[in-house]
Length: 256
Image 1: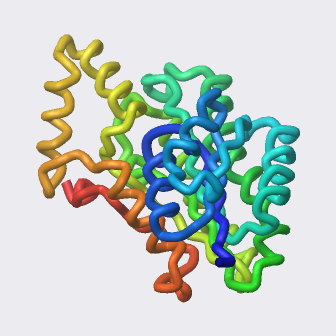
Image 2: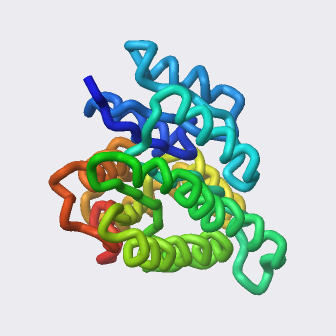
């Protein structure tokens, strides 16, 4: 079977791991990219066949690493049909006037420029595929509904949405480009933010999580699988006529 190939960054845990698992179940071959040393183990655990997923250890801010990931992908699968630019860091839990410029730049390097670098590197392979290519970037509820104390992260995710719009215009009609904007998803990154809030307020992180749930109309935190389902849709043929859009996956939290 001539399966399609998708590249997923930030694939060692959280949304990236859930997305890789979902796409393998949907029939894709998957290239899992992450800076984590165990990315090979993650790929092996998700891939029952032992032949449809590879893990590539790479830092998306290092061009040599990205070039090596492209080479490994070409050698293993010979093609790429889609990229999910999921990798992200949270940055300091500080307000903007208290956030050093270097901290903002470090977050932008990963969240914005890392996403751009990966997509730019894989576009030539995508253009060689026989079907319309796909790129999905990851925004955030907080780019639309900012909260205090997450300045660098919010700025970076706002920029990712602008990048999505620009790429959608410039890569059409060969490649569609969309974003998925998760809300409160119970990942390690979100838990770290809850812990930071609890330390500032003198409460437990569980109490902070309960406060967050109270702002979500559907009454629960999102899961990596919730976000993966939205990404899978945007990669499917059902989304052939969708580009330059942001799909919110936040349980209605944007309404609160």
